[in-house]
Image (cartoon, rainbow, N blue to C red; front, side):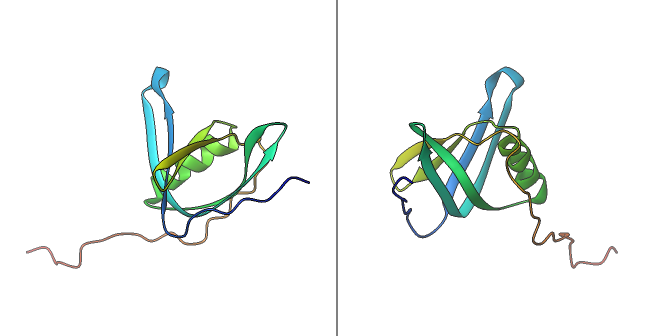
Length: 103
């Protein structure tokens, strides 16, 4: 088993992009767990926050095995997810509505 790594506390920006399909997603994570497997930084677990549509898009990209970039302080690392090797758990989904009443 390889050495475990610890990341900074606080929010970390997580990005996914596919320029051929004009897709760019950016979320924030407060927890990222990764390990080095066969010389690659492999994503083990992540807890994302943000708008439900953005979180769902990022979860689909990760589940599909697409690389994501995580900003840790001033550094950025590329994490390589394992294709279809994750369980997606939706903890909370809030509907945002205006509290103002229509006149």
